[in-house]
Image 1: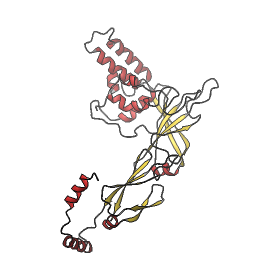
Image 2: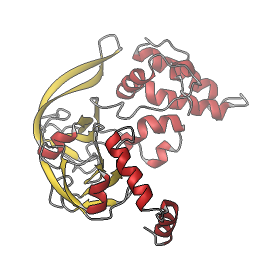
Image 3: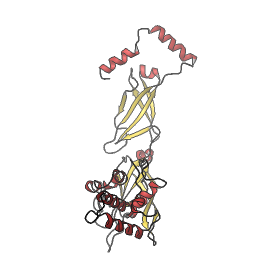
Image 4: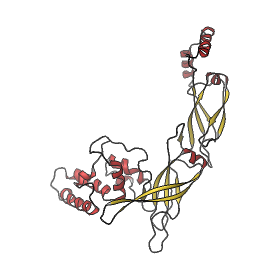
Length: 325
């Protein structure tokens, strides 16, 4: 995907204020609007201008775009990094599928995820608050906090226009209780922490969408925890009970059946993320061979080679594949 330089499309400087953006858009709209323009590519140019204005003419989207696009040039290969928008507080405005269809893939990649939160006061999974506008933000948590639950201070940055019409970021810090077993994509609702109400109406709610930081040993799929379980050859061949250190620091004793092979998965029911319906722990077995550079191990390998001359690993693997194992 190519990076789009919306400032270049509108013909304004990156430090242009809100009035500059409005004037540039109106000027180009008069030039390229298909109803009045005689330019051969008027429709395509007008679509580009509308998309650029949808970003730069909105203080929140402009702040996000400026943060992500700093130092980038039009046309260069571009993929938004994961969780690039974490820590930004946005109002409930969004785009439905029909709106996104009018814009480029670049726009959809950057702002399409926010469309899932819906329109005014109705973020995904949340009820209409009836007062001030609902706000939402993405937060990134450690897996340990998602397992145990915790209370953390979360800093959020909210874009707004200063007196000169330039975008500035206002930061606030909230104390947030993280419930044990929170899943990626789940919302934490903070009542009354969204947009201010008008005329005595209550403030809106703030919805925090949870994402998890990559963990060194575990990944998360829904409520399930996925990890690799290294085994010594004798543990796999003879069976064993081996310890697995969980993200919350606890130790789980897992029984490995005799004859276990690398690539097999062991499922431990209910030992994933906690909750009303706890997830499972999925362990991919991996047999680790002692190095033959160790004289003791080498002696055992040589003895096995002598005493098991009829063992053919390729045939065993092929037979297992035929059985669907």
